[in-house]
Length: 179
Length: 179
Image (tube, rainbow over all chains, first blue to last red; front, side, top):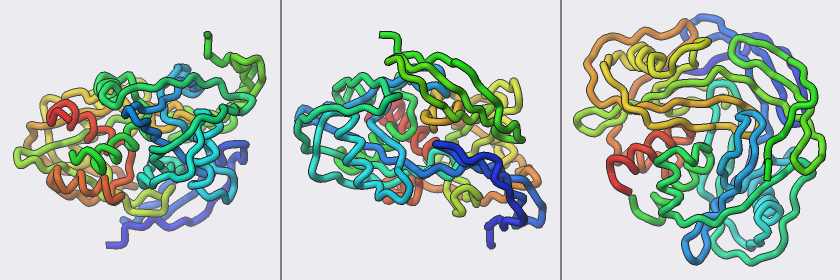
């Protein structure tokens, strides 16, 4: 069965700095019509960095949308047309003050299938050397190095809620810890 | 250090069926001003259902925002003011045709900390009985029962990309499989 929805008409509601909002009328495969409100987002790159002592680099950052300081792995929005691999290299150095020559892919994740086109490209960094952080004007980030065992506890008890962070850890555990 | 960003002014750009878009000017803790484009979303409830044979109920659904049929656990948007627990009970029965008396919490996940307020409440269903599906007018969903081992393989090889699905599986594995 063709499950695809076909666009009948559409309008751009807003074209902002981060998100573009579109409202489309679609034809569903069951013959019904519906409205889809879609956030178009350039996508992001996120980096799970694990040290020689098996510590994970986590960021604490205030997130305005949740009105809360949350734990996340380093990540950044893609510039228009940017290769996510190079975005990940850049964000990793800017936000953690560590430089790596090589990242390993941990695949992609779709955070919000109901209403956004955002794709997050996940990477693993294992060998890196200290350089210096370089934050954007509106970024205030604190870094913590936390053991992988404690990170798993923090996922369990809910101190870590961020989806991309948990997906990256999960892919790492499947690949390297044989779960 | 107080990491909070303070709202200076704000406007509502769009108030739709699913998303509300706001654009706020904020004062960052480092003294800089910035613009935050925020999607206000009512939140969702998602259910990891595991059968006696340790199969996971997955849905295949076309997602317009990604232009792709993707695998997800059953989930739905909260109605205004709705308790996520009851939303989960309802969505589970409507979308999978199974009824349960009791759900166990698997915590919450934040899918999109950069630009959305959406919180997804995760639940585990283990005992359920067959009833009948009842889809919304614009929902076309195919159900598959897949062994937990295969689900883990599908997370590894990227056939499963949906973040809430992977977070729910991760919390289940930590709690019940002692990883």
